[in-house]
Amino acid sequence: MKKILIACALLALTGCATKGGLYEWGGYDSLLYQSYKNPETVARNRETLAAHIAVLEKGGKRVAPGLHADLGTLLLQSGDKVGALSNFRRERELWPESAVLMDAMIKNLETTKSKEAQS
Image (tube, rainbow, N blue to C red; front, side):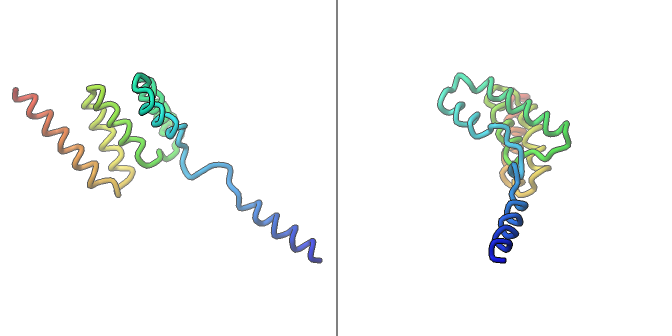
């Protein structure tokens, strides 16, 4: 009887195990590490992150928190202000708790864009 109870408990606990996490990060942690370690890989990593986000969105999966914000930052660093704004807005839309930071990033970027247009 004791063995049956142990077997049932193990079976129940095994049934609770999941294969993956809540989000598909797509190797984000290693991309981020590589970008800091080898700055020459930033362009390739930016493209990889953009492709990963596109696959998730096309498949109807939820993009992990911070991925749009990081892609926006990488795009901004490469000079793509329109792409950066788009990703900052998307991050704010998907993750309302990021609104304060994303609003500040958007405001700063829009202010910079308008000053450049006046020059």
